Image 1 (tube, rainbow, N blue to C red):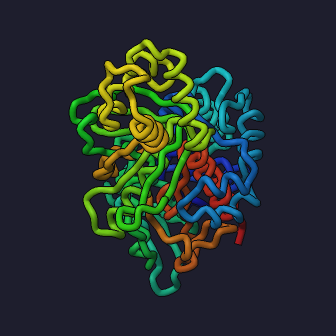
Image 2: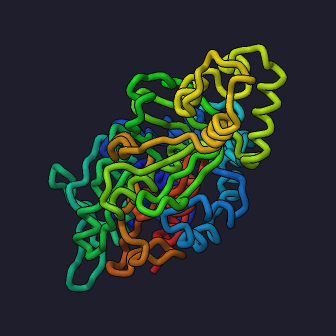
Length: 421
């Protein structure tokens, strides 16, 4: 008989184990994989973006999937607590652009190592390569009674924390195991979809791989309503063109809005656009282009624009504006220059969708947060059953927001589960 059983050794499960064991609970941590912390070890490109230093309101804004739910868990364990926790374990952190916090040595594996050392020092029993077949409930009294393993071994416990992740990055063990256990307890699973995932495009320049590998810095990427043409969502930052479409931070952030727009409007394509100069308005940009071309009036337009816009985009932009790339400034009409200016602020893209959920960094949807007590992460339907991390219908953008949700909900669940009855 254990006080608390935690299923899943990702960021949420590991933090739940620490919180529960620090409160004196006898904890068993079970993971079907051979190693704990696999998702943590590859997070932030192997550097581990442990959290984000923005204020709580800003963090909530960066959790588009039910962010307001996080006010309660953050009141118990927030981003500053996460920073203090890791620094207390000897991991020095540094702040990078947009508030992202990384270990000074850029090694995710060190973060995993100190976290596992802390768990072992708290005498948490760890079982890896152990698959949970079922979570057991006393249906009559609506309470948890334990778990059954794939070898049919039954382990009794009054508290079970499900921290098995969603459906994304399946090689780390996130294969949707938690949803059937939640359903069995009476929980609603909201529709699952990929978020923080590369976007697929059908544009000719993508098919021809003209821009493949081109990175754009500090641009604005917009998703438009396919029926009304109005803006759905825009994000500013960096992106990259791939052989199938776009990726990079703002590409990933816009992806969920492509998925939702396709479903809502029952369409196969969703218009997008890139603003290469988000800091200036259309007229200012037109004047800048005019000045740039005037100052190099003897040069062919394709050469005069070199250094003004990304080199590889010049032929694509001129083709869209129906401008002969060999013409000089004097040979161009005002209308052509206006069109070029417009395209530079509204470079059109045609999204056809995203890569599949198993290629996504994050799963959208999951166990409905309406059925969870936010200050405890305990089920409202089954006493002693707790959820934390990505198995829930909670998702944030990349940049330290998802991992902050995982650590916060994990700590909150572990603390509540360890309380003596």
